Length: 351
Ligand code: OGA
Ligand code: NI
Image 1 (cartoon, rainbow, N blue to C red):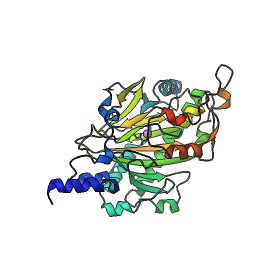
Image 2: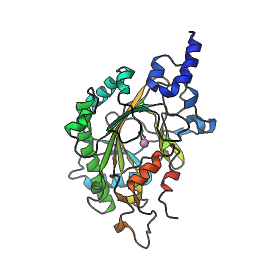
Image 3: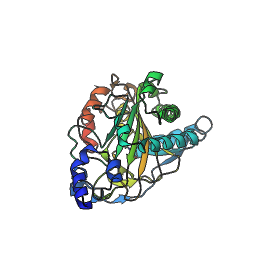
Image 4: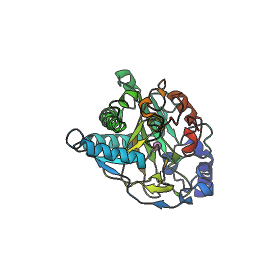
């Protein structure tokens, strides 16, 4: 078979293969299923390189607490995004997680495919793109997702791929501590100590992989979306590609080695009655380099009722959102393609 014929064959099989596998076997052009309409491409609007806030958590537990909290509050109001350094997650834990992620990726496709499944409630799920119903254009990424709600017991761990088990457990344990510290700080910002930690009941660990892309101007690694939960605590490697919407412009997040990127999710926007912003973000792929990112999504349990925290509501600050069950919101989100952010929270907005 000629190289061209081979590529034509790959195009027709594209939807059933992982993107890593497509690239590994020699794909030369992004398959049709991944190509965005021209007005929605990464190149459709300019991207600025402005620095999102970087917050040094050193001293968070003692003398510097109010400085750190003020900085977090401002960042969540103005950007919905910030990076943290001196966050307390040991470098060794990060290194072992990243290494284990690569070891998982390097396994044969048959091995990885054992973790494929339909739906979103499996303890571990391997897949490609964003698997919402109605997703029109696929996304240039493979992922492995773990549900890590509550205590991670031996039975849960048995479902996790052996090459990743120990490192992922260690990583989740440490990053969860950071998440709780951040939620505690944000509760202080709202003036109601401990409120947000008490709402956290469900977490997902996601290992994203974006292989090098032959046409990075035609497709997204992840198209524009907001995260549904309370906060996301994300590790990215030094390749870059994450962009956040800020005052109507796209801003590229500059990777900082071993830092975590923190962002506000939709549930936190509602709880704070719109004071903290859950901001649209997306990932562009890279022509030369593969990229990984590892977010921990911290969310309420599905049964939790979400509405603006009553103490924040008064006649000058009326409630902007109705009450809803978090699970209903997630179901709504997963039944829609990634399509920006505004129309998702319309689900709960009171006009
Ligand atoms: C996500 C996400 C951003 C990134 O997985 O929800 O937005 O930098 N990831 O990979
Ligand atoms: Ni996201």
